Image (cartoon, rainbow, N blue to C red; front, side, top):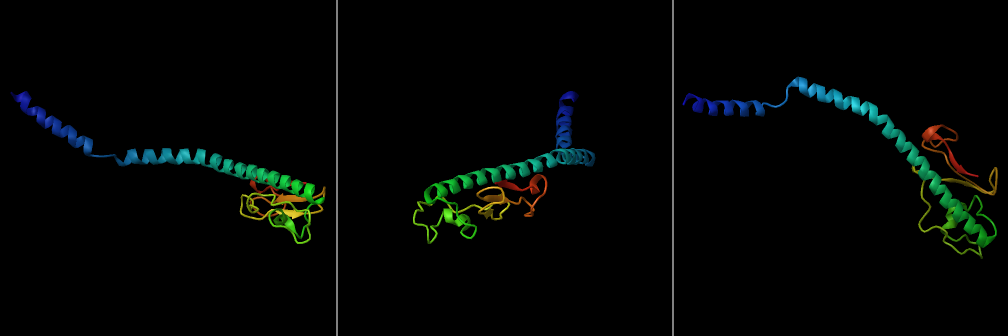
Length: 150
């Protein structure tokens, strides 16, 4: 009978040990592992964000350049620098052949929230269309690099 009465005592002791929680050492080991994973994965994740913003800028510039080409087909010329990209959405005053709008929505900012730079005539062609990247300055590398269409 002794073995029967000791069984509830063992069960109660086992339950108490399960409820005790984690030791400080176990918590420290988990925190170190999380820190190591963050140190390894974090920089790779943030570099991918920069690459996706560059890709978005390239896609937007491509769409804007196609809209500019459609504008030129209708009017015979690209919008002037003064008219800017707004001429793709709102008819300029002296444009009799304008058949827009050439963009479905208003002109989007670049992925960093800045306006695209448009010049016509351009330095190397009919027009220049540029995003100066994350830093907003000409030149740069990686996410600060210029994205352009010449």
